[in-house]
Length: 302
Image (cartoon, rainbow, N blue to C red; front, side, top):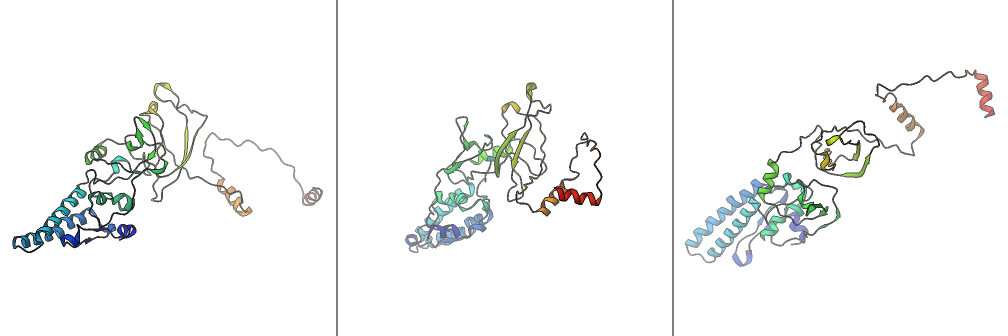
């Protein structure tokens, strides 16, 4: 079986030729925690009971098949529990969203979720999936949520994949008080950054701890394919516990190749958009009144 076939239709067995045990076939996209429990404690347990009875009757090979089935059940138990090295690790998810036990997010992909089965050695053939560091670097991440991007107190951003986390670590992260989520699901996670951060020159009277002025920060980001905007803005320890206000405005991109009608529509849409009550439109003065004939002459002269 090729690596691609092993990914599309994962097969698990324990030496079926030498021990006479048939392989189990299961669809990855349907292998939920409940399905794996059913495989482990229902289907496989029935096989164990049958081989146990056969071994008592002295049937040839039954003892080997019983041993193989019991070993497979123990390995599947380890995958269900999810303790290292049989845990699932998804690099881009914060610690409190990492799966506890076999509770995978199938959208994370086979490369992430197949690791426990490869570690347990229950696949007919392990696909060629490497756990080495991926290319590129992560943007700034919170150390509490993404400790694997930090080393010796310094942010590295290395896209590591060979990381193992205990269930206790994940539960502690879930129980840790977290920042209140705002309307629009804005939180301290990042899906995608357009990496442009601009500090404005105006302070607008905002002060941080100790009277230090906080500058206005403008961040341009992008809503994820799931319709949720995630932002992660490192401000520094000196701004810890400072309450801020988040405002979301769509970014309008004006094309330089607009037609005349498109430009007219854009201009008309901007009319009345100034909501500042202090804004004053000054007197425009008087304009010379032209009659129809003089307009024609003026146009001709120009």
